[in-house]
Length: 236
Image 1: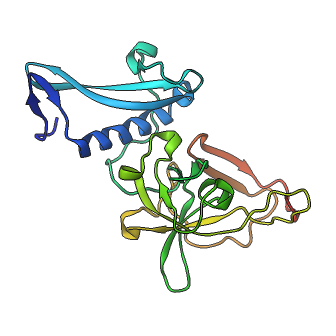
Image 2: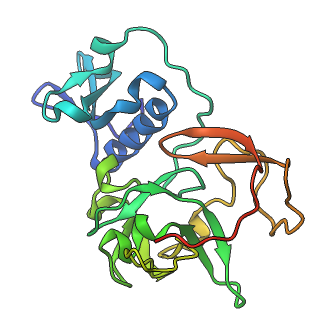
């Protein structure tokens, strides 16, 4: 355990920044386990005896019974199925949780994109961080989202920049549900997408029927498929 742990009245206490990192690690661990997809990480605690930190306990609560705290070892004493665990970092990458600080949206951070001036943005959906999620340009964007344990003071990665102005109407002609995030620290974030080898390096304009596709979603994990339709239609 890190040297930053110290004793207070005989109890082991972890510094706030480390607690945040452990909580993020808890999300990374449990998001890959099918059983725990229905649970939210409420907190993480360090335990031990004689002033020595020896265990990390993850407290979770089921979405349908919010407020009833359980620990991971109570629910499932067996090992977790984890696809990838890397360094704990402040930055985000494709496949991570994201959402607006003031809206109702929660979804997946898609990837990093650049405009013609090489300014780097985050790409996601309008219904996740934009107007359709109840946000206005300039409103804070978090990772993870509020519903996934994020908080404005600790999880901000940037602000809602541009959206596709999705209109919820039976007569609307929406073509795109997209939004960009103006990142507070663009260089902090990774070009990689969780669970997918390599990183996006352009647009595959030759993509056609039968071609393989891979998606990394925060709630679904990595899924695979193939192009079955080439369609142009409007979504009301």
